[in-house]
Amino acid sequence: MKTYQHIFFDLDHTLWDYDRNVTESLSELYHHYALQNLGIETFDKFFAAFHHVNFQLWDWYNVGKIDKHNLRKERFPRIFDHAGGNVAAIPGEFEEDFMHRTSSKSHVFPYSKEILTYLRNKYRVHVITNGFNESQAKKMKSSGLDIFFDLVVTSETTGHKKPDPRIFHYALDQLGTLADHCLMIGDNPNSDILGAQRAQIDQVFFNPEGKETEIKATYEIRHLKELEELL
Image 1 (cartoon, rainbow, N blue to C red):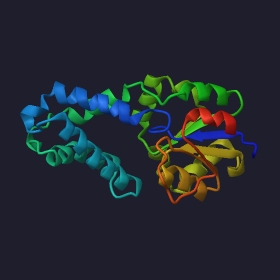
Image 2 (cartoon, rainbow, N blue to C red):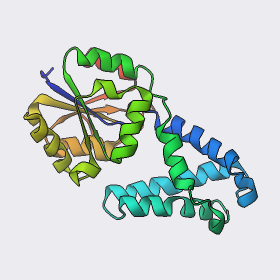
Image 3 (cartoon, helix red, strand yellow):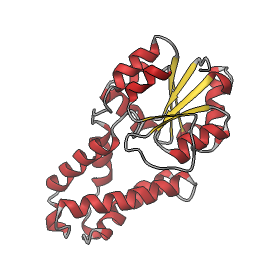
């Protein structure tokens, strides 16, 4: 096992439980705004439309086909349209309410704080995320994750998104370290694993569902506690 000095984590889907937090927020929004009266017959339709549209928009964002402003501007009109809702009836504050509710949620993956506590005693621990500054900072504070990290690098700050190696190079420059001294942990084979590979940083693929991928990481785990065996 190589001796590392710096551990980089992805945030959403790796430490912060994006799916659980977003599902709670969407349920609250569906009932608060009575979306059944705006043409979206069931929460299941709203939920399915969100995941279809949001995944596509974030995929576009990650490859530079859409920017932050237009992602947020287009998200719920596209979702309402996909779910059969009345796009013209979307409340003006809907997107901001979604962002506020979601970023305020505190659910994290099992053993997140325990493994961060363990790692902090041996390494410097950081975040590299494609998320936006304000929402990512709020997520970390609301969930109590913020106290564990020395450096938080976002695509919004750097102007580069994983898997672009420049976001990793930015982190290395900020820390005054070398790729060989670092390890990246994340759930996304394309952004986290491939991005780290392009920056010549070793990787841990966090794969709780055991998904198949052609991109092979340095290490692979199903549960965060397994990091104790690696590190």
